[in-house]
Amino acid sequence: MQQEPFAEVKVLDFSWGLAGPLTTKYLADYGATVVRVESPTRPGGLRVSPPFKDGVAGVDRAAYYAFFNANKYSLSLELNHPRSKDVTGKLVQWADVVVEAYSPGTMARWGLDYESLKAIKPDIIMLSTSSQGQDGPHASFSAFGIPLAGLAGFAHFTGWPDGTCLPLPSAYSDFIAPRFAAAALIAALDKRRRTGEGRYIDCSQLEAGIHFLAPAMLDCSFNGRDGGRLGNASPYACPHGVFRCKGEDRWCAIAVFNDDQWQALCRLCNPGWAQDPRFSTLLARKRNEADLNRLLEEWTLQLSAEEVMSRMQAEGIPAGVVQDARDLRSDPQFAERGYFWELDHPVLGRFPHLGQPCTLSETPARGRMPAPCLGQHTEYVCTQMLGMSDDEFLELYQAGVFGQ
Image 1 (cartoon, one colour):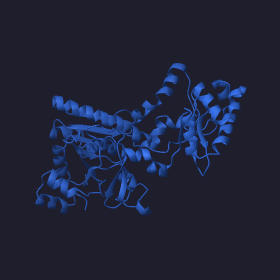
Image 2 (cartoon, one colour):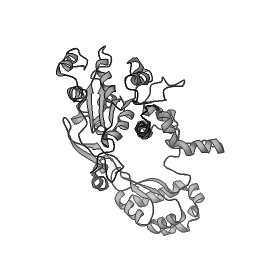
Image 3 (cartoon, helix red, strand yellow):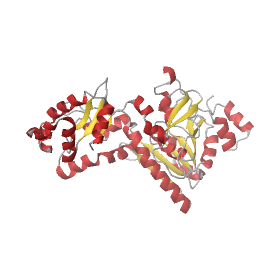
Image 4 (cartoon, helix red, strand yellow):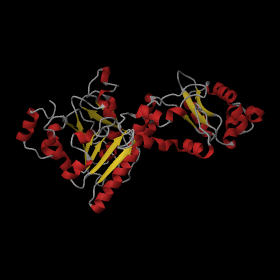
């Protein structure tokens, strides 16, 4: 195996929520040395979010944190301590990249804004990922993915036509923004390699999320149509939805986009549907969608979700089991590709850490070490990476800089 792509890259991660850690995970999983700076008195959101190991809360027992933070070091540091700059100055000199995900202005109050970092290390690359960017009338508004999904417009499209809008089940923009942020960081690293110049990157999670509403925005801009809630339906396909199957809370998603798929569905489920004038065309099927969905579900209820999927796919009809968390953990496709990294966590034990969806032929991502406990590597980072003497480290430790 060749050297990992980012083996020489050193990353300083001041993130608090999910967007920042997920961004640095791309670099860490492909070889970068990532040091997370964490506060023991105000732990990041993922460290205090359930589920916890055995249902017992604790900053080192949070599965959510561990799942997204393999291959990283954890340094415990109280940034409000007057002597924290004795550590942060050395960290910046050590780093190639600094990532932060606080509200705009927070890093400046600690003397860690981009201009201050450049004064320490002129070629530093810094990424700030925040809810709405670093400037503008709403820049100071603190938020995370759930309310941002509403602000970006996603909730307007989520739910049933005769009901109220529904929130997305996760902090959507926190999962979207890192894709843009990581690409921007890679571009900045390449630019610095060629020119020796650093960069500042301002990533708005709100703006990143809106990219995924492009069809609706274009339809509104050019045709004046304000799309709304469709439930599981589609204006371009019918049937299109999730259908109950045999067993408790078992479902299969089915989508029919063209006449060939419709004829195949009729052959499989009920040849008489092909002769029914209610279903003769897509427009006719859309007008009678409720009746068609009811008839199709009468058929799917007789079979397991897996059997429905297999039979549909064998006829060329797009279909997939609606998998729950237990299904995902035992899915043979993920197992074959090693998508979940089983690593021995100091507190959680053998635990599945999230892998990467892209496999590079010569330098694939890999799980080198489990997610860290809070402050697990404080002494190692200070003495081995930053070159502090034992006496210097002990003095800062006794002064409470590391929060112990």
